Length: 247
Image (tube, rainbow, N blue to C red; front, side, top):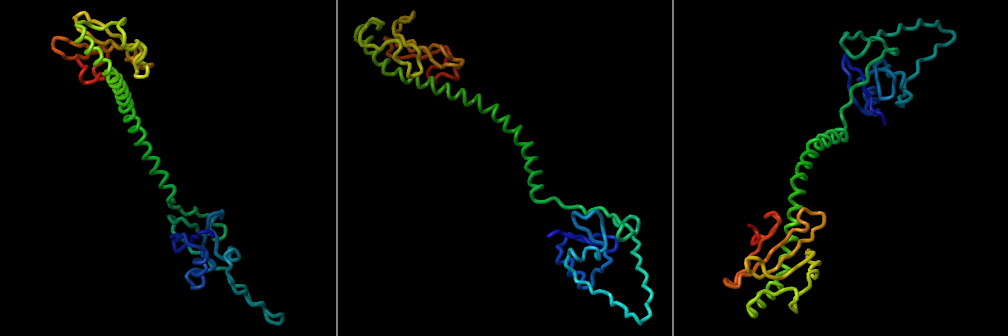
């Protein structure tokens, strides 16, 4: 059902359902001359013009008998003269009144609030993404380098045992050691064993990180037979290396 507005003095009342408007008429709170309006009407108009739409039953005037002297028709009541500042005009049927202002619905308010939140959240999310994505990339590369270093532990034990037993560093021609390409599954493109310039025995591993800045960087594991200790170092930035390998 449509929602209706009606004039009361120089003020508009409503919105209210059609049933309540009819009830006001039946209780003599409004009359047939009361200006009313609903969405869809071109202008404000007297209640009498919409009685059929509202289902109002208005008593018809008694029809005068032929023998009786016809009484003069009563003059139509003047519409109330309203102050110039009122939203209603002084004419009745031909009066044009501005439609009453409607309040924002709950959906409209939700849309406005949601739009405002988006204006705030989108830049914040962009800033967080700019910070989080590089940090996550660094974390994944650091984890891969650590996994590659861990995969070399069995080979470290093998190199140490050989150096302690034979009194020299193992080389590529010594039997029992893996081939340079046997560690590709561990994120290493090549692994070589031998003797470093400082006299230490050890391992030189090449990182395989396609598309990353550390792809092709070298990782060194050196065994000092005199102290019985291993040292780790690498070409990559310290933030990507295991803690024990940082300079």
